[in-house]
Length: 221
Ligand SMILES: C[S@@+](CC[C@H](N)C(=O)[O-])C[C@H]1O[C@@H](n2cnc3c(N)ncnc32)[C@H](O)[C@@H]1O
Image (cartoon, rainbow, N blue to C red; front, side, top):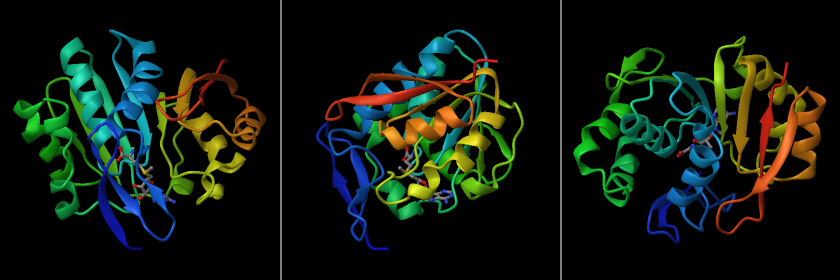
């Protein structure tokens, strides 16, 4: 599929898939979206605790890198698993301006390491942060009570409705530990119904800039 790198409204870059007219991040700001959806409404619920995170769609590594920066600042231990069937190639990674936009130039080597480390092995990115990139399709995920938090960042329902199905959310529910949490930028009724069907308690929160709402789902058992 033809791809181009574009700038979003907060100055951070993203990848645009022309055929689908779909981006890896919000056009209203890739960094602001990641901070709002995944950090403020996800990671911050677990402040100070060591946690394991599953990311659905590792993509450009933006969510992983921002999570690393937060964890480093707060000295929080994070075991991060990013699932991705189509890794972004090195040439595109080089065009992502996240390290500069986040004013984190001293951690450029960390962003690089996240992309260069081998898939399917756990790599100690720093003393507090380990990363396992799994080259895997989402429907192959078969973990049982392994994760505290899921960043559900698949492409939108409009282009990949099959990834927002009860089958996928059942896998997500199963992979979470009791009282685990899933956050996503999505806010469609059909998505909420699938989440509820598999057992999640779902709440609607204010969305990132450019989006009215988003969901957070709890495995309350
Ligand atoms: C919205 S993007 C993820 C953006 C990413 N979180 C980031 O920070 O850059 C969705 C990702 O899901 C991946 N993907 C799409 N379909 C998939 C599938 N069936 N299984 C695994 N990965 C898939 C895409 O390659 C893409 O990287």
